[in-house]
Amino acid sequence: MKKSLISQLNQLKEIKPDSAWKESGQELLRSQIFTSKKKQIGIFNLSALWLRDFVKVSSQPAFALAAFVLILVTSVFFSQPLLSDAKPNDSLYIARIISEKTHLNMVFDRQERDNLSAKFATGHAKDITHILTDPNFNNQENREQVDKLNENFKKEIYSAKQSLASPEQAEELNTEEELIFSAETSKEQAGLEIQENDAVTIPEEDEEIMNEEIVIEEETASSSDLMEVDTVKMLEEAEKLFNDQKYIEAIDKLNEVDLILKVQGGPDEDLTE
Amino acid sequence: MTANLVKKFKEKNLASRVRKQDQEAFIEVYNLYVDDIYRFIYFKVGHKEEAQDVSSTVFLKAWNYINTNKLDANKSLKALLYKIARNSVVDYYRQADPSFSLDQAMGIKDESQDIEKEIDVKVEFDRISVLLKGLKEEYREIIVLRHLNELNWDEISQTLGKSRGNLRVLLHRALKALREAEEKNK
Image 1 (cartoon, one colour):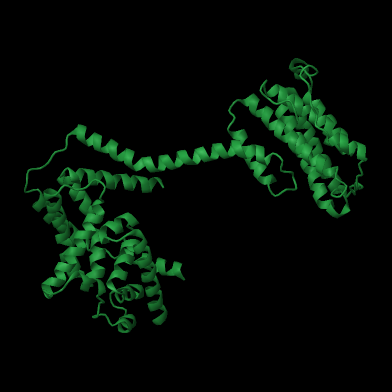
Image 2 (tube, rainbow over the protein chains, first blue to last red; image 1 turned 135 degrees about the vertical axis):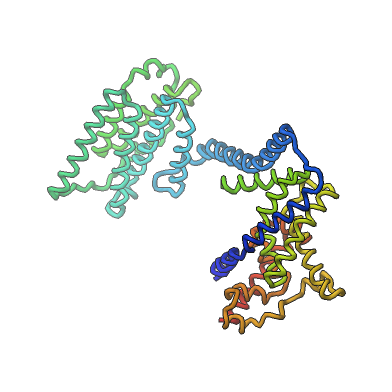
């Protein structure tokens, strides 16, 4: 209603004087104001006016942009520790993903970026595995969500592998991906049934082990040793363990990958998880 | 956004040059604002020819003012033109009735307009134009300044000498009155 009123008012902008009257008015004005000596603004003064007006007009949007960038940067760095605990079935998980993506976009060194991307992907895979170890969640009732998480796990592992792979490994991965996709398609076309996983029960001792803080001492894991380890292979092993529903072992494997990535990330990285 | 910034910059630069009494810059100001000033006056006086006469005097008065007074850099040139236009309208009414005051000008309704009759015959204006003319002068003024001539709150505040808060309330009431008039004439 209000909008239609405003749009009707906008039509009234068409009310304009005749162009002939405008021209004669301009001539009349010209003849009256040019009776005095014509004022000439020097080129220096004119440039100074331009510069001053440009600064005045652009200062506001420039300030707004600077404030926006500042808020973005601070929110990325301050929100990350807060959001890092969000799990894939939390409502805050999407905020965590956005925060990580923004963080990634702010890293310009390619190697560092790949490393960080792999670290995030491994973290996601680990979180998914953690959720699937919960027998209250991983059951027939939540079958749809469980299937989705299984799918997401594969995507995360693939993304981590791609970030860490050497050029030769990347080529292999691409071929593998093609094979996976074609295999899945043929399965669907053949109308094969996918075997459903049974609910997982985890022994109490294993759960305790899983929840324990893993403290790694620097003496046992020197960075030079860890650099030589093939992280892609380790991720593949973690994937295999996951597929075999050996979730605890898969988490252990992913923790190892995470540790290696932290060491590779630089000496400042905190090795205590 | 960029177009808006360029427009702002152009207006600011023209105002700076006019402050230095640059005649060519003032002719550019005329070309830039004459339509808006004419429209503003037109909705006050209600007749095309009279609106043209009053509009012609506004720019000359503005030039004389700039020549004899130092313009404040924080004051908008556009607001100055509207202020002069407003006073020129009061002068126009005073010519017809010497006892006419500014306060009277605020409460004026265009009595010559028989709204229903005008809508039926559809002469010069469309429906909304006629409804607008039936509003109280201060309501009509704020609607024209804000929605037709797209002045910002600072410029309107400088033109009408009212605070932003008062102006917002006034515009709200004006639009409400216009909506009610529209309902009534459906």
